[in-house]
Amino acid sequence: MSMLTDALSIAISELEEQQVAELVKERLDQGVSPLEIVNSLQQGMAEAGNRFETGEYFLGELIMCGEIMQDSMVILEPLLVGSNADYKGNIVMGTVKGDIHDLGKNIVVMLLKGSGYNVIDLGVDVSKEKFIEAIKEHNAPLVGMSVLLTGCQESMKETIAAIRAAGLNTKVLIGGNYIDDLVKAHVRSDYSAQSATDGVKIADEIFSM
Image (tube, rainbow, N blue to C red; front, top):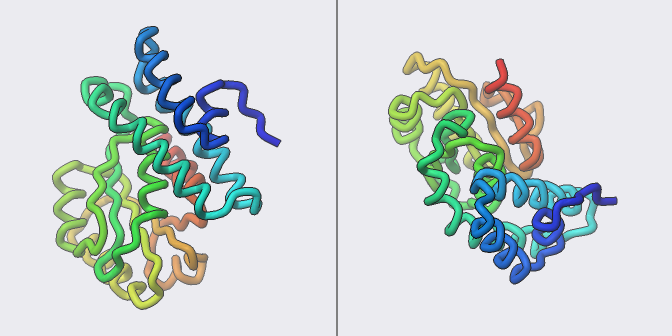
């Protein structure tokens, strides 16, 4: 049973698109900080993620929730740019070379942004060189790699090896529908996440060190 009490969190968790849009505008008009609004949205998205994990929601509902969040972020992200002091830190994210799936990655990116992180999203089919370049440019303590295709596991392993070879002191988090401890050991990542909310918990753990 949902423990949400905030009207905006409840609205997005219930997929009430119009109500979410109205509440976001209303709160901005009232002077509520954009980051606080994003946090409310994130709590609702986390609830939708929980419902997906328990089977109450299906993939369609999760996608819809993500689209409602994206619509809200179109308004909120430009307002967050000027409040970098509120950001917890930089995280580089991308789907590995050869894989063009991004739904899971996009949900994690939105949850991380909602939790106060500055996420550099490299998109899909990202080369090891591009990952390394972004980690260096943004001095990111954490890089997240998404994969859906089992055939791209070696690409992930090569990318992680290249990051280590470049001498970068960044933690590597991997995620995907089949990711488990065996895959984590094979590709030699530091962390693995089975759900979008796991990704946020791991980021919080890393940035609190």
